[in-house]
Image (cartoon, rainbow, N blue to C red; front, side, top):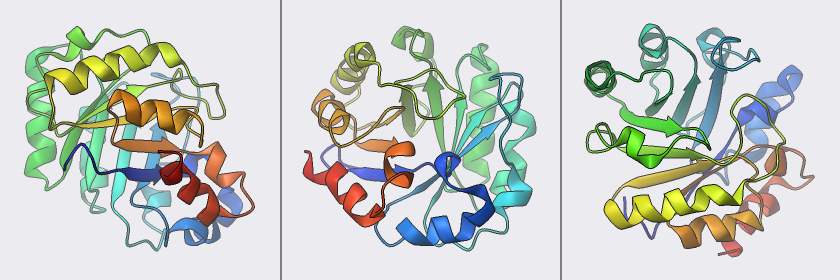
Length: 216
């Protein structure tokens, strides 16, 4: 994908789980991807849904699976079986270079693109071994595991560095993305924006998603 294109991926972590299909339907016509945040209560403090819940969502958009789990190698097959388009795991959960390569290869073999995520405190250099093999770099702009946090502008420097070093890489940002912070993200070089609370707290989801584009 060209770095000049932009993907908006609503995170259903911020949706009303009791009406999840309605929530997906409310924005599916305007979004590009749907992001599913998978949390295990170990890598991050909270728990969220897994494949059994996602299986029942009627959706034609690409599924972007964000694995905030300690054992991503044990979780990828359940989401590949659901037709996941992209699966991202955290660098902090898989610090070994060889294990990262095995995981990336397994995701690719399963027919999905692979992403690696870094927390706000993790230097870009920590994923230098994997960034040449993945399709997507996720730079977290909040601490993972909780929705509704404030955007951390200090991570934009890593995005700028990544874009300079990897001009064709898809760079995703997640955390505190709204129609104000979206502009700074894009200017830094991000071309894939995950937004949860901003979209799902809006009365008009179409307008909210459009504002993420128009802010650019």
